[in-house]
Length: 149
Image 1 (cartoon, rainbow, N blue to C red):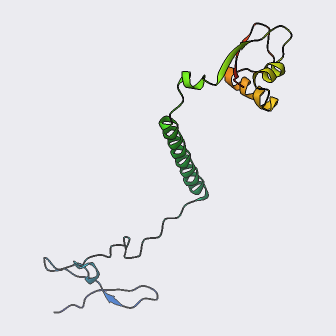
Image 2: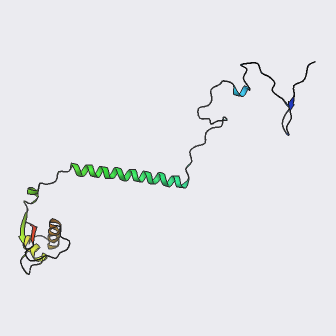
Image 3: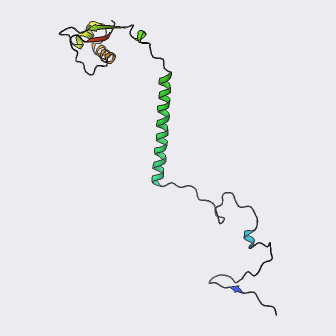
């Protein structure tokens, strides 16, 4: 006697025969045959979704980019500074004179005496920079480098 294969019934679906025993080496289902899969397809045959970043991810990515740009800028500035050729101490002081502040002198009077043809404010700033002064106050007996005028 020949028996009919059992069928699986579900709501809203068509009637399909239930799979019976298969001969050895027979593929389980035609869909699972040995054919190459799509390169961009995820499991199940659907295309992979594009990468999406959250707000936090975008902030982290922007911060990382800013940090990278800052590091590269500092590196470039360091290289530029290392390759510049500073003046030797002797060459730098060729246009300088060392003076000793007398009693009653101010930085203004020292600057006027050092280079009377230049703007006194500019000469004062040069003296402050040359001697690494923290203010414009000078004391009697103090030795200062001043531009030669």
